[in-house]
Length: 301
Ligand SMILES: C[S@@+](CC[C@H](N)C(=O)[O-])C[C@H]1O[C@@H](n2cnc3c(N)ncnc32)[C@H](O)[C@@H]1O
Image 1 (cartoon, helix red, strand yellow):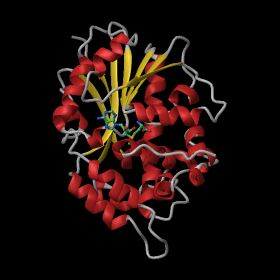
Image 2: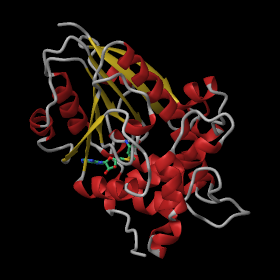
Image 3: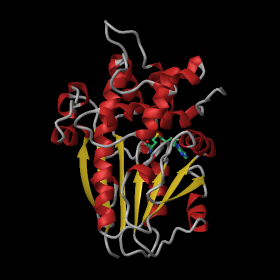
């Protein structure tokens, strides 16, 4: 059987993220299903030995850091699923996933007829995901359109060429992406989203306002416990070196109040509403980092 090679550099973050979501679908109180993620984790034996830690799932992982990330993935995925259902009900038939990774919302969520989901990520991420999808019997529940682009590049033009209509309502998701971008790029992305004449534009995403160094220090403190061998090297050594400052301010301060109505939450706040474990050291009230979840709707001009 041919070896399954995980894409390198920042592209690997999408694979690790998916793996950390894998256990959710098997819980009795599951917040969502994660069919591709479960397949991914089951293929651990097919990836090169030095890449296997990318496929540590968020529950049985031995590292507290990886388990915490698993909790975070569950909470944030629920937050965005809920938001996207609401925007679909309000008339959005275009969904744009920037930094789509192994997102399978185009397969696992029920979408109104005519919904188009545009997935923007690197060509190698799309190829890896297609290789996984080919091993499943998943069927799309919306039209899925792949766009291979850097989010710092010509994605706006590519979207238009792929059929995105900026005169119609759309929902944009920046899930797990802003952690790796500088403020200027974050601002440019929002400008690119807000530019059209559509009557309704929604935007959602997550990021941390702690500095990349604080994130690295936090991860180093939590990568192991005394009883278990470390399985978090992939996060600390493979993914966190790509961390960037992101927007640098809470969502309602970052997004112009003149242009956006913002609803902001945090990992702690949303996790608590779901009765999910939110480790003390991720709680900003106890001095941990602030992990923001937000959704916003553009104000009529
Ligand atoms: C942490 S993953 C999140 C993936 C997905 N949104 C999810 O939550 O499962 C970040 C994704 O953003 C992509 N990404 C990061 N920087 C990018 C860039 N500059 N251009 C395009 N994609 C990028 C990576 O390839 C990766 O798939």
